[in-house]
Image 1 (cartoon, rainbow, N blue to C red):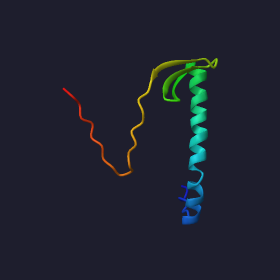
Image 2 (tube, one colour):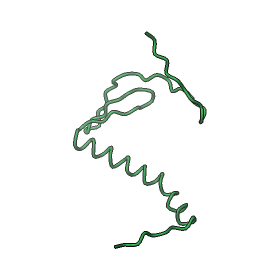
Image 3 (cartoon, rainbow, N blue to C red):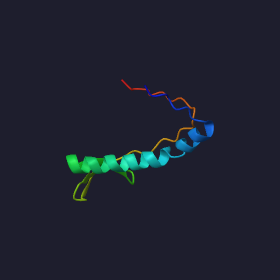
Image 4 (cartoon, helix red, strand yellow):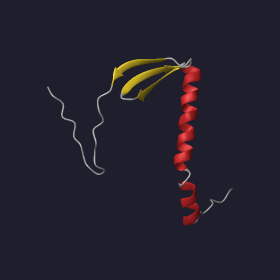
Length: 82
């Protein structure tokens, strides 16, 4: 049975600093995998929803609404009209 490694606070902070880089490379791998397996991905580009094909062609699906700025910690409630 292996013993669990105990990390110091400094070692933990060092590992946590790598999270953005790891996330970015994981996203790129997933993007390339989606293109190679399905041949298409949907992405937001310059305020538009765009379908990108493996051959590099892009087709605009629709224009996206402007983002709503939200202050961190603010609660927003979606009110549905009847």
